[in-house]
Amino acid sequence: MNSLLLTGGRVLDPANRFDAIADVLVVDGKIAAVGTGLTAPAGTPAYDARGKVVAPGLIDLHVHLREPGQTAKENIATGTAAAARGGFTSVVCMPNTAPAIDSAGTVALIRERAAREGAVNVFVTGAITKGIAGEELAPIGGLKKAGVVAITDDGHCVQNNDLMRRACEYAKMFGLPLMDHCQDYSLVTDGVMHEGYWNVALGLRGWPAAGEEMIVARNVLLAELTGAHIHCQHLSAAGSVKLLRDAKKRGITISGEACPHHFTLTDAAVAGSEKFWANDGQSLAAAQGPTLPQWPAYDTHFKMNPPLRSAADREAILEGLADGTIEVLCSDHAPHCGYEKEVEFDYAPFGITGLEVELALSLMQLVHPGRLSLTDLVAKYTVNPARLLNLPKGTLSVGADGDVTVFDPELPWVPTAADSASKSKNNPFFGWKLKGRAVATVVGGKIAWQVAA
Ligand SMILES: [Zn+2]
Image 1 (tube, protein in one colour):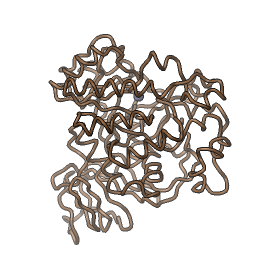
Image 2 (image 1 turned 90 degrees about the vertical axis):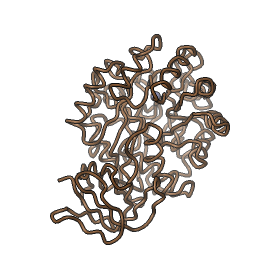
Image 3 (image 1 turned 30 degrees about the vertical axis):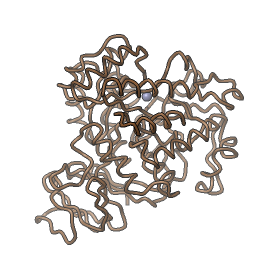
């Protein structure tokens, strides 16, 4: 059954500037009508959405599904199950798998497997360079033909500016945006956390903000030179936001995304919960009640790339999201096995899972404090990523795919490792008191997941 009538919710469809109490009817996997007092064909199941927000299916355009080759961490089935639990009907997977997604054959493999095993829609990105090695261009035309929606070397960053320029020229020719993980290797070297007060206090090697800003500046110049669209991934530094803001004012085809861990946490978290709550976490502590979540210093669940930065950087990311400089929210869902993270901070892999908690954290940091309207938040998870990647998604227009997310922006809940659908449990927000959660995820008219009553 690919039909469903969602009744009485607050329907929020930023693409159509629609915000009203209404019903949404999905018939045969497509949106058939949005309005009041809708009647469905006999036998159509109904979902009572009263008191909830009914939005176009959310899209996360930065997800590591780890298939092929790294399926001890995650696979298409578990990663998309986690997406459904987080309210996501579409994910865009990154190509830093083993082998990397740098050939038409690998793209076809993932698309086939995702169609068979995916709980939600999967869109695929291809590598910019062969093997994500940053030396030779991948067959960008062939990747496009195979169906990739963008190219990126995520996890790595093309250091050779001429090679990146050529990539821009090809990508533009094929109508593909480039997504870039902005990291200057010569500045960052083997840094493991933000270069500032805490890395010195903890004796850990620093990853300076300039290491990101340098590549954002490079991308502004190359977007201007070539006319290609460059999308800067997981922005963490205040200087990056400023560069993006200025470039966009000049009409340059550049955009950016931010992840909840960067606009919720700071580098103080690496020094342990006590230091975090006493310093940068004060504004977040009230929501946690009398017992604050606890973790030790050097906890590797706070190691990500780019790293958690200073409170001023966090504020700049929030401002960039509020004023529209950063158009897209995403998780950078990066699963790693427990044994990989259970090592010294220096040796642990970068990254955390995020699909199941990102909507709550975005609501808590952006909507609940009044920085962003609910409509603008939904836009950053729907129409904005859809437009960036030319996805036929992100709206409730009649005739569109029947992907719908129902969420309760006020629902209190506590995420736990036991409840996570991801294969990996590397998430620093387990045990936190969160507010706001998806309650039903509808993919092509079918309920892919709903919260237990
Ligand atoms: Zn990355």
